Amino acid sequence: MSIYLEQLKSLMFHKWHVLKVGLIVGNIPLWRLVIHDWSKFAPVEFINYSRYKYGVKNKAEWAKAWFHHLHHNPHHPEHWLLSWRGNPNFYDGLGESRGPFITTLAMPEIYVREMIVDFMATSKELTGSYDISLWLNQNGPAMLLHNDTEIRLDRIMTELGYVLTGNCMWSYMAGRKVIERLVEKEEATTDD
Image 1 (cartoon, rainbow, N blue to C red):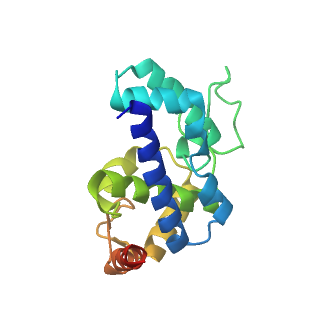
Image 2 (image 1 turned 120 degrees about the vertical axis):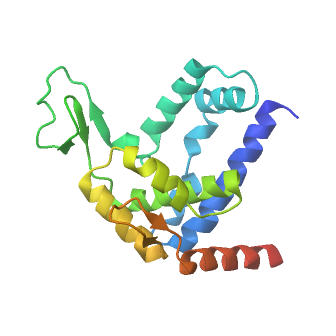
């Protein structure tokens, strides 16, 4: 099978699970779920991701696709970073400084919800489970997030049934509620 057909299949799998999980998580307009990752159909992303994932692994091509993706998809936290303006104080007052030339902006709740749904759909493809607690525990601390974004993330994760297991915000464990709701919804879809 061609690398492009494989990429299309993978992309449609992801979009389907984003839609399913997004409807369960709620408070994300249907149109946002439908256009989720729409930029992956643009040639710069589709071709370069296809080649990287299923063909020759060229990091420069992948980086070009990723850069395009981040700038067209506000559900990625990197979309909300401001960097380099030639003056370390240029962004003062716009967000939270994370060092010279790096400022984080707060993600609106709709995009935090879509980000969580994106994580869950990706987890489903890679691990077979919607549970993102292990991935989030490992990768969350390295994310550059505005404090308001972290607060929204924590509130939504708790609302979904995740529970904190430690003293830091990245020590999540999937509560029964979140997994049961997702499994029930998936079984109902398969039975149709």
